[in-house]
Image (cartoon, rainbow, N blue to C red; front, side, top):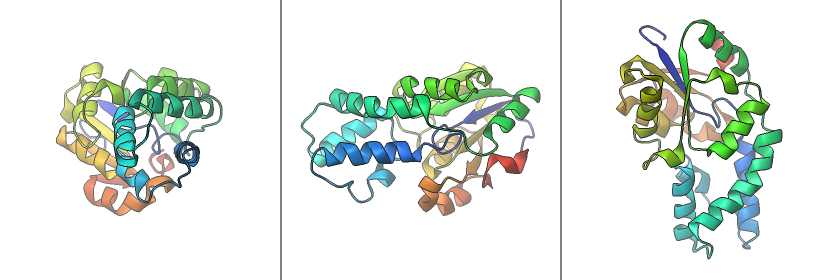
Amino acid sequence: MFDNIKGIILDLDGTLIDSGYVWHRVDEMFFAQRGMDIPEDYVKKINSMSFYETAEFTKKEYNIRESVEEIMLEWQNMAEYEYSNNVRLKRGVSEALDMFKKSGYKLALATASSDKLFIPCLKNNGIYEYFDAYAFGDEVKRSKEYPDIYLLCAERMKLEPESCLVFEDISRGITGAKKAGMKTCGIFDDYSSHDWENVKRTAQYHIMSFEEIL
């Protein structure tokens, strides 16, 4: 898996952290305040979108009165506390990151989450210092189905794309990383389990948890 690899790019939600419940709770509260249940297939539709894209889609698709910026702020306020205090790492993550760093790999984080969410979360879980670079959704114009965010990570690590390995839990992210010319490894997550067969077909490698590579 690691032949000719110099850098490892990791997704956050569903890959490094068990945060699926946060956004489900945010979604429930957001729609409940408007007298609605979470729309069918909503999570699947927004899975690889950036924070801004998700707010834009939600406003247009469900005729939300508030502006895109107001929607984002509402979500941000609801999620920030959980990310800063309660979200925890998935099994084997801390040990895997430690192994990667000791083996000499550069590490980057590619996440659709905003820096106001992922930085407190990483610091609270003691893994912030492992990363050499970060790229988050609002820094690129297109979703993870495209190579933009992965190429930005490679650029910030000062590495060629073909020398990078990407860990993702959704098939659209795997597709974007492959378009960037990178190797890919899918990782199972309960909240995106509906996509697991697509992940296995799309990624070059796949694991159930980071414990498999320790």
